[in-house]
Length: 317
Image (cartoon, rainbow, N blue to C red; front, side, top):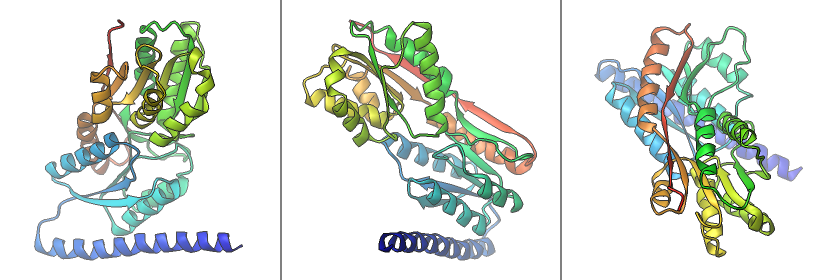
C-alpha cells in the first residue's frame, strides 16, 4: 500500500511540474507575442535519449524548425508513454501550433490524439509511427522505411560469410513501430536465405541491455555468427561485452547496427561493426518542418514523408 501511495504521489508531482512548466511558458509566450509579430510555435516532446544519435536528432530538428521561422518549445519527458502523453497535454494547454513527438510504442494514444484534434492542433509522429485506431483521424508520420532498410542490412550482414550460422537479434522496444518493422525486414531476408533468428531478446534500445543480453547468451556465442541490433546503443553494448571477453567482431561474430550516430559510425570505421544503417536525420528534420507546415495549412490531409538511410558494409576479408 505504501509503495502504491508513493508511486501515486510521484506521478502526481510529475504532472504538477509539467503543468506548472506549461503555465510559465504560456505566460512568457504571451509576453513575447505582445512584443513581436506572431511566429508559429512547434512543441517538441523531448524524450530521454538512449544513445547519442537521438540527442543529435533532436538538436537537428530544433535547428531546422528555428531556421524555418518556428518558435520551438521543448517539453522534457521521461522515457515512458505516460510521460510523453502528459508532455503532449501540456503543449495542448500551451496552445502550440503543431506538436511533434517520437512515440515510444504504437498503441495507446487514442485519448491524447482526440484531445489534440479537439484543440485543432496537428500531432506529428516522427521517426516512429502510431497505429491509427480512431476513425476519421488523419495519419501524420515522418520517418524511415525501416523494413526495407533492415532487409538490405541483413543481406549485407549475410555477405560477411561467417562460418557460424547462429543469429542473435537484439530487439528494440516492445510494441514500437521501428522494432516491429526492423524485425519484419530481417526475418523476411533471413527466410529467403534459409536462415532463422536463433535467439531474440528485447533490449529496449539501451546500451546496458545490449551488454546484459550478450552476457546471458555467452554459452551460445561459439555457435553465433551474426548479431542484428535494432539501434546503436544496443550494438555498442554488445560490442563492449564481446571485446571485454576476447571476441573479435568481424572475425568471430559480425555485427549490424541501425542508426548511425557518431560513436557507432566510428566503430564501423574501425571495423568493429561490420554493417551500419546510417539514417539521414538532416533529411528527417527538413521533412518534419515541411510536414508541420502542411499539417497547419491542410489539417484534413494524410501526411507521410520518408527520409533516406544508407546501408554501409565492410568488405569481407
